[in-house]
Image 1: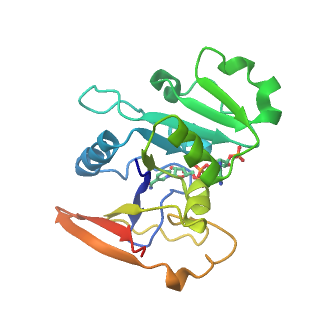
Image 2: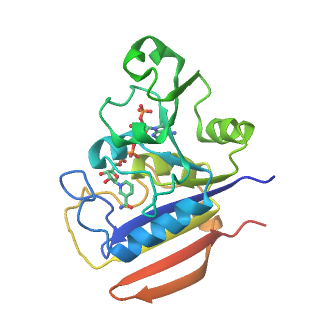
Length: 209
Ligand SMILES: NC(=O)c1ccc[n+]([C@@H]2O[C@H](COP(=O)([O-])OP(=O)(O)OC[C@H]3O[C@@H](n4cnc5c(N)ncnc54)[C@H](OP(=O)(O)O)[C@@H]3O)[C@@H](O)[C@H]2O)c1
């Protein structure tokens, strides 16, 4: 079965995905939450960034009480702190082999898999090996950057929320030092755009030949 990788993010009218305090609290409407659940219910695995999980401490069960896709976190420089809701959802933590000796606090809390192959395509291969083929990625922008730079994303769902934050250094859906190589040859096709109340829900597909 072919694997697909979708990204789901919400951003403000000025393209920001994070508040100055490093969270996204208070900017999500009930409709966006419902859409997020719909995307999650179609996925088998949900890749999340460690910073996002530590900052926002999200819930991973869907609002109808069903478990949702399995959360997957990739850690290269350190492991997550202990008291996070992600541990209620039987996460898979894929971590650098060098972190194995520091993982005592996570034993019995998560499935731990240690490896030195931690590039975005290595992670997708590992998930494919585990028969997770419909993958959702919910950032944040640092983690998103690697997958967009490697051109691994097939579908992009963006919700535009009606706020303007300003502040130059707040990131958009992708944050990286350099411009994505050949970005002008990597076009995206808008396949859906829907206005619901005060928000816009878009769906883009990467136009690959
Ligand atoms: N608006 C939205 O829809 C939305 C959605 C999600 C998150 N957010 C916001 O995003 C913010 C956090 O974003 P963030 O950019 O600071 O962090 P992030 O993307 O959530 O997490 C970054 C961490 O992921 C790990 N990672 C693992 N593999 C990676 C790879 N291949 N490339 C890059 N990083 C990798 C890194 O940890 P190691 O160094 O240990 O590898 C890195 O420090 C939060 O404020 C949250 O509110 C917003």
